[in-house]
Structure formats: C-alpha cells, structure tokens
Amino acid sequence: MDILRGKRIKKSSKRAISFISSIGFDEPITRHVIKINIAHMLSLIRTGVVDERVGAKCLEFLTGLPDDIRLDPKTEDVHQMIEQEAIKAIGMQNAGYMNLGKSRNDQVATALRMECRDRILATCASLVSLQDTIVAIVRRHSETPFPGYTHLQHAQPVTLGHHFEAYFQALQRDIDRLKQAYARINKSPMGLAALAGTSIRIDRGYVSKMLGFDDLERNSIDGVSSRDFAAELLFCAVLIMTDLSRIAEELILWSSSEFGYVEVGDEYAATSSIMPQKKNPVVAETIRAKCSTSLGHLTAVCGLLKALPNSYNLDLQEVTPHLWGSLSETRESIELMTGMLSSLTFNVKRIEDSLRDDKSTATELANLLAIREGVPFRTAHAIVGKIVRDSLEKGTTLEVATERLLGETSKRASGRELKIDKGQIRNVLDVRKTLNGIRSEGGANPRLTLTELAKDRKLIGQNMNWIKESQLGLNRSDRSLSDQVRLCLRAVSS
Image (cartoon, rainbow, N blue to C red):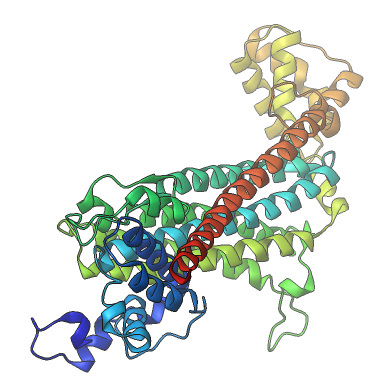
C-alpha cells in the first residue's frame, strides 16, 4: 500500500484500513475493473502516451486475470489489489503506468454503472418471466367471476383474469422505469480522473465505446461523485418490491380459511412447529417483509447523499452494499413470486359462492334506473341503497327486495313509481351478465380482457427484444475490447 499511496502519510493503521476497506463488497465489480484497466491502457497506447511494449506487458497481465479473481481481504479495495498484483507480476517499470491518467474515483463510478447495467437486464428478464406467468393465469381465468374490492369490501364484480391483469400493468411500469434508468446509467465517467479531468492524452470516446457505453458523462465533478443513478435504481427496486408485496398480501389473505380462494404450492409454504394442521404462506410473507428492507436501503442511500459536498467523498463507498443487497433481494423475490404464482390452485367454487347475492351488482341496477327509466343517477343511487339496506335487514336477496320495494321506494324518492319486470331485474343483477355488459376500454368484460391479453403478449415480446438488443450491444463491446487487445499484442510481437 505504501508504494501506491506514496509518502504523504507516514504510517497507516491496519484497523483503520480494514474499517475503510470496500473489499468485502467489491466482488461484483471485479470483472468490470479489469475491463476498465484494459480499455484505459489501450487508450494510453493508442494516443502514444505509453510505449507499446510497456502497455503490452500490462495487457498480458490484465487479460490473464480471471473474472472471479479471489480478493485479498487485507487490501483496501479491488483497484489497489489489482495494481499491487501487477507490480508483483510485471514490475513497477511496467505496472507503474496502469494508473496514469485515471483515478479510483472515475474507475469505481464506471464499474458501478457497468454492474448496474447487467443487473437491470437480469432484473428485467426476471420481470418478463413473471409477466409471462401472470398472462397464463389471465388467459385461464379470463371468464372466472371474482369479487372486486374497494376498502377490502365487495364492490363490483370483475374477473380473476382482470384482477391479475392489473398486476401485469404494474410490472410493465416497473420494466419501463428500469429501461429509462438504464439509459441514464449507460454514460461513461472514465477519463474524468479524480475530479478535474486529466492532462494526460486519453481518448474518452474510445474507452467508452470499448466498455459498451452509449455516451459520456460531461462534468468531471458530477461524473465521479454522483450516485443518483444508484438512488434511482434503488427506487425502482422499492417500487418493484412494493408491487410484489401487494401481490403477496393478497395471496396471504386469499389463502386464509376466511377467504379460501387459493392454495399456495407446498414448496412455497411451511407448517407449524407445534400445530400439525398449519400450512403457512411463508414465502409470500417474506417477500412482503423484504419490501421494507428494500425501502431501508433506499432511505440509507438518500441519507448518505443528502449532505455531501462536491466532489468525491469516501461516504459514497457505503452506497455500494445497499445497492447490491437491494438488487439481489429484489431479483430473488421476483423469481420466487414467479414460481409461487405458477403453483397456485384456485378454488373457483368458493370464489363464485362469495359472489352469491353479495349486492355487488347494485351499481348496475342504479345504472338501469338512470338510463332506461330517466331517473337522475343520484336519485337512482338513493333508491337502490334503500333497497339494499332493506334486503340486509330482512335477510332477503337483492332480487327479492327489488321486486318488492322498487315501486314504493322510487315513488317516495322521485315521485314516480317505477316498474321493472322480474326477468329484467334478474338479468341486471346477474354477475356474468353484468360483466358482459361492461363497455369501457380497460374494463372487466371478459372480451376486453382477451383484447388486453393480446397487447400484453406484444409488450412481453418488446421487453424481450430490448433486453436482447441491450445485451448484444454489451457483448459486441466485449468482443471489440478483446479484438483490440489481440491486435495490440500482435503488433508488439511482430
């Protein structure tokens, strides 16, 4: 360390070095740091700053390192460790040029962005798989009547497929946010050095291209010290986990004996240590809990960033473990939710029984009075409300109460006695006919759900194409980097 840090500090403390070390959470960026060193050295050779033979020695060392190189816990960070190993392997006369024109500040900012790109693509792929599972449920239950809830009370009938379609839409917004975050993350800080840029001749555009970036960060201070991309990605993770938590909450409720709508597969449940009859939806409960953990990661990072002066401060290092922790837990939660939804068994009879005379078609009765009988909707609302109350008080069905009370109640409310034949009342209060009568786009009519299903499949295809194209772009840059190294080494050896 003394060689790399110079002589400004007389002595160092092992305890202090251990305290400030990031080596414990540098593993995810190790392969990126190696690529960054390779691209930077190629740039130095390309601009004539470093002799080709010296540069070739550095490139041979760097390309010989495995992506999963074992990190030495005694070193301060992966950047220092690689440079130390290079000095041991090829000598100071060669390795001493590796850090010319760059700093750990621009290097770590670049490596973090590179790892974030990979994790965004992996998370999006997991979300698409979850969407695909949801689409299968929507297709299978597009016509299964299901109680729609507001305030956790039966409100109006929907279908089970329509309910799950709502999950699909929320997850699509999560994917859209990750795509937008990817575009902001995919800008290279390399070449900005510690905070002011460098007088060394480097080609930032070349390095950026070799590392698969679409553009450059334009301000040296902002480029090395901004971590808003990390906060944004953590926020995306929080929203994903919030969506997963809401799904989990409903599965927990629906699998209770009070609801009895669904049973979770055994592999996503656990029994009690004392009560042998229990089947607890523990995976759903843990996903719900980890949403709070995810929010804690975001809060911690915002707390770290809120009062930092420009430019680089070592406080920024503490962002990284929160980033890796949140993104890892989010992806695992997505994948477990996908498996759990695939395992669900719905008790359709129990669901249909819960809709029997639950008064959730009362809105359609009010609509009928307004449209066919010319009663103002607010008056119709009052008429039907009185009929519903009487039905509940006397323990009769809404259909019977309507037949008995509509004339009397309507006359009192509107001054006009309304009469609707029994067949019409029965039709308007029928759950399936109510669903089939919905006309508004995006509504719960099974035919409309099938239309949305076709759009969902198209979105899944678009999502997969974006992931594929983005990954192909990164793969192309990796191949270009390898090709450039081979050309350079061939030129030196010839």
